[in-house]
Length: 282
Image (cartoon, rainbow, N blue to C red; front, side, top):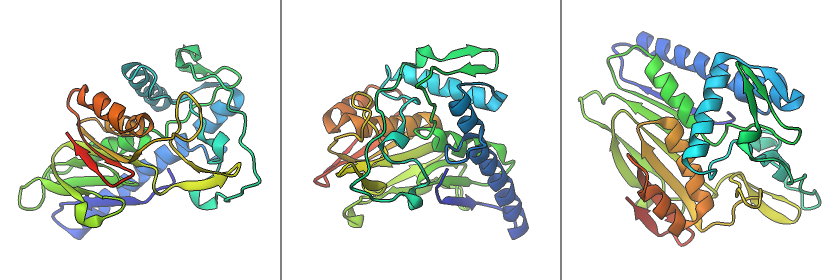
């Protein structure tokens, strides 16, 4: 997933913690291999290239998670958005800032109901490509956390999207921070147990293409980098996929619409930070 992978375990010994780490790493690598759009041999890449593929049960499960969120958000979250077409076509550290390069074709089909499913066969339309990056880190952190058989607390953190299971060594809730992009003295702390905290923002992954600044969160209407006053959106929810997807959606909506959208969702807490550094919390 092209991100840092940070793990915290409350364990009885170093050997036990090392075992948890090995298990978690192997699981993360399996998801990376299956869903990476930077690996031409991944299931995702093969499907996007061939447009039709009999996929694994886990791939199909992830697809249906995405579909449910797509419907729940009335299309605000959309796994058919193609961030590669605005220049994010390789892992971020390899992206060239090139003012002379051009945007790829943005006229592609984003109607998820046009995707056909026959048992495990997924069939895409000619201009469609799937990308689960908008929620997959949150989904995977929760999957990993619940796969580890431990009585102690666990934090699985992939690129700043995390799932917290259980409690710390003193049987208290773990306390995690939402970073303020401009002023770390304004970081916001959350006590968390058995929930996901996911953050999306436009202040890190930036590049230049077609003589304009781009970032990796796309507006469903323009299919280009969202023009937004939300610099950072963090969502707390008991499902990692929901937290991750809703944080992505919030960035695209702008502060007022994002606050309205998130306030209406069940089981959601959030932190929104705007371009002036102002904070809105639930």
